[in-house]
Length: 303
Image (cartoon, rainbow, N blue to C red; front, side):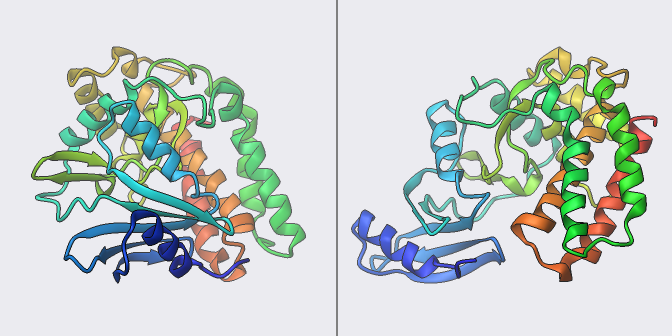
């Protein structure tokens, strides 16, 4: 794996934008990406964000969202180097307050009402119902690498979910179907003096918009269908499609959304464990999260 080339990426971006130098200040940095505030000699600032695969197409998604009228930060310049993306973006400054549920539904209505773009990957009914099978494939690779050896329960649960997945995935393309932000949390919505901007488009795709609403309250606490039902009703009141409340896959909209969001997260965690992070030291934390989410899926899918 190539070392983090953020310094070289920033140099390239400074050259493109005609800046001589910049002082870097970390805002949030982890193994696969980083966000920094950079200050130029004239005192102006920008946000420098860098990320490695699979987060390396965010510049494209942000530009696309901007073109289609979604309020997002402006991308001044972007560059790719050794599988890493670097972007210089508009600095939105401090937020005036945290985003609340009504801010979230307003942003979701705008995003989900935007026409879809062919460049975004698609998560339709067929791909949704294959998520448990894909997770089982990741598990097989982990075990070949002599990891996740005490996770027979994970395999058993995934197989049970896989058997129910085809019937439970029905209704995936019911409206709202289109742009899915996929990292849709209050922290991804910047409320500034001049309105709101939606951040963090690194994993946007085309799929069921209900997954965004299911992710809004996070996955740290147990899923709360009643709270999601209220959010879905607020979404419809704010101009979202009434179909957001429709039952699908033999389940209520809220149970369907929470169950599939958890299953989507499990598949992603397991792919991350074997492919993107690929660090056995992280296995205990990943296994714990996967077990918790799978238990939620069983309950929500009534398996």
